[in-house]
Amino acid sequence: MSDGVVIVGAGHAGVQAAASLREEGFAGPVTLVGDENELPYHKPPLSKAFLKEAEAKPQVLRAEAFYTGAGIALRFGERVVGIDRAARRLELAGGGRLGFDRLILATGSRPRSLPLAGGDLAGIFSLRTVADARAIREHAAGAADVVVLGGGFIGLEIAATLAAGGRRVTVVEAQARLLGRAVAPFISAHVAGRLAAGGVRLLMQTTVERLEGSAGRVAAVVTSAGERVAAEMVLVGVGAVPVTELAESAGLATGNGIRVDAQMRSSVPEILAIGDAVNYRHWQSGTDVRLESVQNATDQARLAARTITGREEPYMAVPWFWSDIGDMKLQMVGLPGAGDRTVVAGDAAENRFSVFHYQGPVLTAIESVNRPADHMLGRKMLAAGFSPTPEQAAGGELKEIIARWQQTAAGAAAE
Image (cartoon, rainbow, N blue to C red; front, side, top):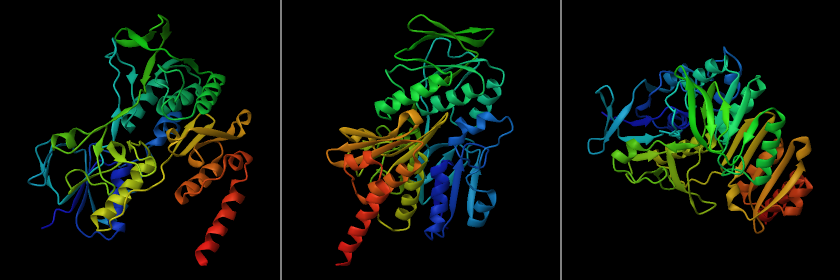
């Protein structure tokens, strides 16, 4: 009897892989294994809407009836501790075993730890799961002073949410600007300005010396400059690391993630990997990347399902991402770090603008703040390989420009 496909990880990537296998006509057994006792849920709202309302519940990715109807077996509350490659079998924490013909690792990432004196005090949190979000929400209800360590997306989303709810929030960031590894300096400066106007205190180029407590609970953050910042709770958001222990113990090739080819196969062909834990050669930049986004997770999941069902296609999805930080909807498409020139369109004073990134004459990415039309057009342009000139991008007539280009391209194809 066939063991079918087993998927380890029940986040966005794992659930989409299970669904896509059925959509692609895979008729064998499909088993989804997750270590949480929850129906799989959307992760992005956990740092925003979920924290605002005490009774908010996680938004499930698929209703339970979907899994039943699609014949997808659910193994929740199960932790996989080993992969027996020779026997094609998973070892479970409770002593059980689960066979597979093909295996998909969708193990995701975990918050990066920040070893600090006082790090064992109560009131220190990081965010990965809905259980983490519940704990943050419950603790924040009684906290007046909050310190966020790290100026990345998760940290800033939480900082803006809690500040809007009336807390005194301080963000401590070691680098010279917020979101320094992810966005253009113009975006960083704008986000910093809006957060500061909303009451968030920003300590830039500052590290933490230690955490101080009272009665076993955190009470203050002491910075490298010697300042003591009151803190009834501390949120650690200093990035994420890929969960690769299973892959490493099974002898799969790793390096800043599980290494995969263009079809999402690991160095062991019957084992595929997708999502935040994966490192792959990007078709656009020609460099090895590991992307942490819902889009990347779900697109790789769809491709993995096609690989398993015999459709050999390379992964060439255009990466895109979004983040809601206070009153800023930041949307990104492409790889901003690949360019050598930027052009700004729109009005930052109105909190509506886009930054276009170019490598020579080629458009490589667009970052938009409250300009969703630019983002959607950017996804179309990058997928089609079309680059408006920098002057055209700054002029704000992209819809008309791309329409004319599409008409020209259609006419040429008809000849």
